[in-house]
Length: 91
Image (cartoon, rainbow, N blue to C red; front, side):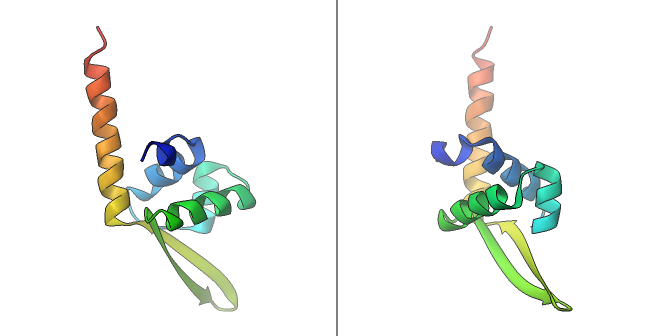
């Protein structure tokens, strides 16, 4: 789990998706990442089971829509709880 959250872009993607599904263009705008970097990180998140993708065509243009999986939601929640616990220990 730590490897997933150690990358700023992956953390931004997960943070964006926690509120609901987003398409590639929305994620690119939210994260301000390049298409190549965003695509690579989305592929990793998909490979690890954190994100699912639905590919479709709108007219003649491809559209990829992403959402967090139950694994992604659960592990993100656990990560946030771990951070909260760490912050409680700071005087």
